[in-house]
Image (cartoon, rainbow, N blue to C red; front, side, top):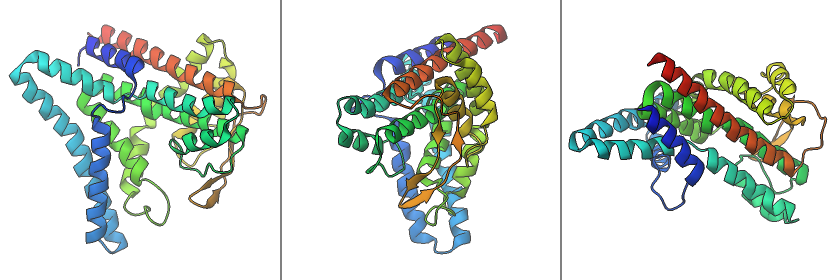
Length: 316
């Protein structure tokens, strides 16, 4: 992937986001995962076989996404180089979710600012796994900021990282890994066995991007004149205040930059889950903090592109 295509994919994401009626490879990946899960559950009846099935699903889905993407681009290159470039640009753009994440967050807080908390709860339910039916305004804002913070890595920084080191095939393989985790990687009775491999490999895939995100978000907080010192220090202090080895890095950094507190107890699938608190409760969380989190996420994506482009230039 050329630097021009890399930059073009990032610009397209900022301009277009995720058009509803456009074909999207991540939706196809999700459909493949769903089909594979249904087949595995029909065939496998025991715990050990579900662990094995989960590994096989991972190989099929990630292999199809990564190797299939590479094969498609190679094939199109033999037809016409320009055709390959267009498809490569489109595929690269679909691995990024910055604009989509921003739009989803605003879809939650815009009704909230109008006093329509019911619509806000419904819109939030589309982007989080927790029960949203009884959340108040502060809880809605906290959940939205947490989602923006966590997905700053999953949806923006990590895809940019993998696009940089391995082009579209590696970025698409990463998106398959991430989608597998989001669909199967739950630590509950239904998914503990079949989602084990997906959850663990997603942790590995996000190890470097999460820590890179801590630095990029801290720099972005400084550029936006937020509390960059708290972003950096709390990002480090509270980096393990989450069951995931990666999620708290970005959540703690954003919490520090905004001077708010994230985490705490939440209701998931009918069960109360106690989570450690992240950040310091200096400001009362409100819709303005969701807007600032979105600005911080978008700024971090811009800083990431500049940093990766600079490294690219030096290496070349």
